[in-house]
Length: 151
Image (cartoon, rainbow, N blue to C red; front, top):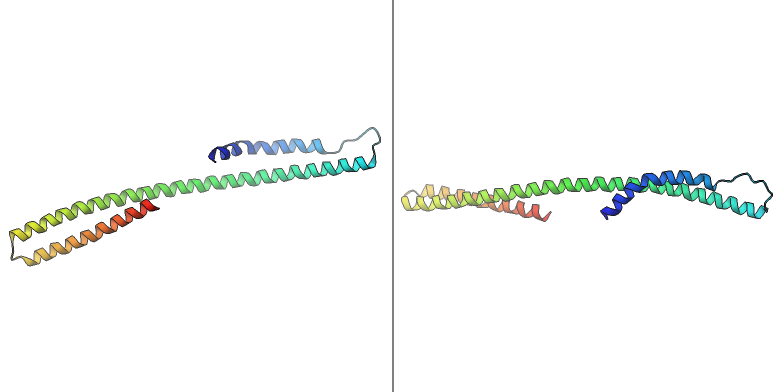
């Protein structure tokens, strides 16, 4: 598909030149001898049709060139969006990994605190709350990473 677009993009500027040089070939020329009026009318009709076709081809070539430019612009836009999503996915994955490490450290701290002081129930509750919050953040970060991968 991209090969055709490149080929069309390369050849379209020349279509206008070809059409411009072809139109005079289909216009009437003065004739020295007398020609059958029916034949003359048919030639005129053919010349008019050829001129109209050449003009139509020129219009189509211009529109095709505009379409190709639009497709290229859309492709550039999609590439930018793709890059942004890749960056978002990378950042989300790094955040998820960081939250996981923090969660593990927090769990370790909670266990150490519970072992060291059985009487300090408030500290254990506080650390458990922090653990729950870090798990929630981890789930959110993983969800963002999954979303970035899916889109």
